[in-house]
Image (cartoon, rainbow, N blue to C red; front, side, top):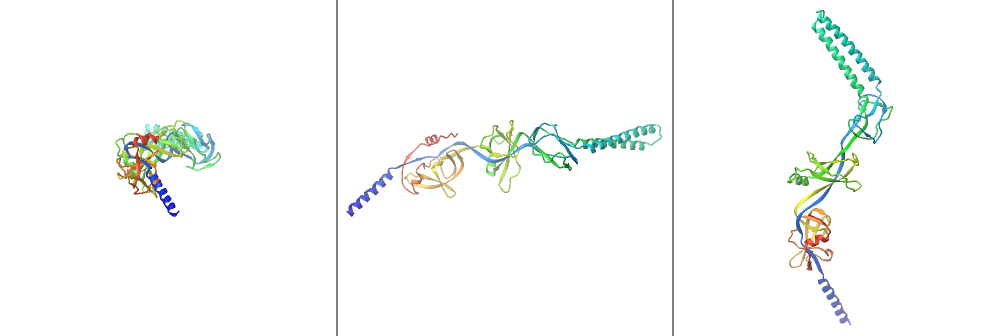
Length: 353
């Protein structure tokens, strides 16, 4: 009875091993080709013009002509500081200018009759010019009591209310010109070097903006400038893209992500499902001519839907395990079935040029 059980057990084990040996694991080759990937960068959105409006004179805030969030036109009145004192100063300056003018005329008549010297005439003329300048200065101060919009834009929060006593330079509000938006994003040094040394570096790079609601902005932007210095703490450098904002969707201070298409030439591409991770490293199983699988570390250079771009670790002539990664062990001999790389890519439902 014991012998029969032993034979039965041995027979079952043999059948299991035969069954395992009959499994044909799918394998393929990496693909070497040109492709593009879309990289995203966290960004800050700024108005093309965003300024503070401040009181240019002391006085009581007599009237506010606009409201928070309102669109204003260039030259539109926004704030009125009580002008009484400045009007009185202007009237005084005009009176002194008139007096100096009369004195100059009289001095000229006397100078023509040689009653007074040329120096006295010059002094009278200087007094008149000084009085005229005082009039211009008083008019300027009076003009500062009426604050107008310097450009078309959107007004922000009111920092003062009617009746407030203002000091010179006190903040009243901010004004944003949102017709165009500047979007800043930080690029690592390696990617900056790839960009600046590329053949099309002088061509304006087109980018897209992914807004905070995970939707793409309806206008495309152009990378126009790169800042002069790297951030020594992060190793990044700031790029600036300009977006037209005809519908006023974007506002100053928003955040989003810049989407930039980056070309890759003659790179190795493999399906993501052919990889596995141990700690922070990525591996594939390479199958040799002896049908033995070997675990091999690779370096990922980029990611596409369902695919990885491999920087180091593989060549297009390697044979990699496509499926059944969890069913095999390192240095194990397996049976394989080869699938053409292009067929593998087509089944991943991916478009890559």
